[in-house]
Image (tube, rainbow, N blue to C red; front, side, top):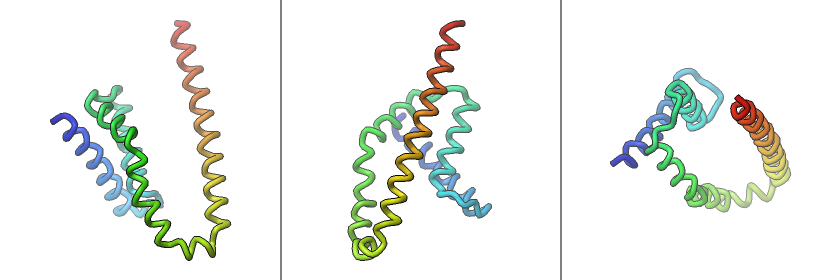
Length: 120
């Protein structure tokens, strides 16, 4: 039962993000806005409920299954992709580099924060 409630919580935050983006014409994907709302709620709460942590971990462990529809969609549009391959490749490479730089910065920040808490 806890899994279902946690999963519904994730879906409700996604729905809230979709509604927020739609109502205020925010140029963000709805699921991203929902994840930011969830992050804000977790920061305010100052902890992650165990059921939500377990459910999220389970979803992340099965993340590749969630990409199958997107990959199938790319294959359906393969002719268009053949014509416009360069922007697709550039976006993939630049997006990957940005993700790596931001991840490295976040890791560095968290490690510094952890060291400062350990020294106290």
